[in-house]
Length: 314
Image 1: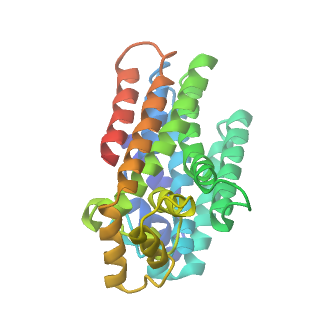
Image 2: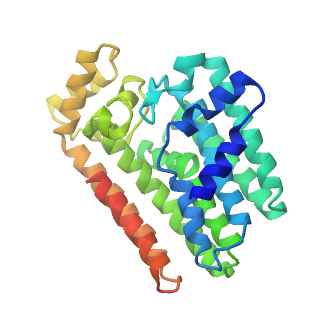
């Protein structure tokens, strides 16, 4: 990870002062480095010593960071990783362009890994864009909003986690069945990760998550607890309080008091517990994908990671 951090710092560097400052902004803010960790761990299932592993880990983190610049503009999020979002510092146009610049850096780096990696990265980027597109326009008439949302999570978030693990196994020299297993694991872990994030958006403080609690609610971005609440009301299974809460969620949440009130009500609602259970289920299914992997510390680490995600939601 130290090598990845050093290479990441080099990858975002620019001779242009504005581009350099803005590109480093989110990298310097830290983050979990979850995706490169998956890459490096998967690589340990093979020989784990190939220099391509570091480049692959940097590619997936660059892709993730680039997407955050765009996401924060679309979501009007004031904070990211505990720091002001790039668009709050430099404005929307600069944030979008810097995101594009980082996507370009990721593309240049993945080109050195060969055609198979380029195709995989391209298809992943396509899925990320489609996930964001489908989140933006919402479900079609007659489409189940919960199933639509799970597909959005698979495309927008889980696809890059699957690719992170797959690239690690590929460049670690693993057999194809191991590559496929860690890819399936990463896909399901990714959904669990985002469902746990939905819980944290409501249940945690800003200090814990690095984001303002209820940011998604304020911007009317769909999350699983809200979708489950709407589902109850649409089926006629909601209480009068549930109906009133949905009306408030659809209303003006720009004021801190109004936002805090709906966050408090959702924290106390059963739908938050249902989302926790759903996150745990996806995490357990991810762990089940590890069966083809050889026993050892890497398989144990992947299993522990899935368990930690379930605990994160809890």
